[in-house]
Length: 198
Image (cartoon, rainbow, N blue to C red; front, side, top):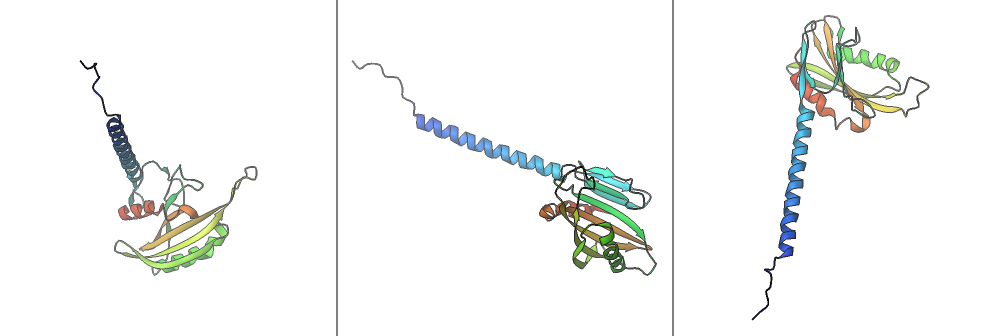
């Protein structure tokens, strides 16, 4: 008579199934995380300025400033942007009845060095915003900490101003970000422009 032998289990098969289950779970969690991140990045709220007739979708978690006085209609900034807070801004300037976007860009180039440190123009190109002709100017400047008691490394900022004219007004749509992440975060500005009405 043979002694009792317990039924053998294949430990390698069990390890293999557990490994497959762990990989599938990790891939599923990663996909869920990417979906949630995409939804968060893509979520937006409607901004409406009744006085100037401007409407657009802006990122939902950004800080909104409408107290720009004559400098800007509104400014939205990403509070988590590092080292520069990604910025989208809309400004309106009064221009003559015969003004075109190029005239406005020329004036921006003249005043740029006086309002932005180490200002320089990278390119000026014709563009369009919906049905309207526009001019797009890409530039850079160096932002330094104005408080002398706070030590900070100067930040090279890249910006783009898209200028359109409406009657005797020039509307300037601005996007600025740190030079290192300018192209990476430009989709915020492109999404904004796709929804803007003026």
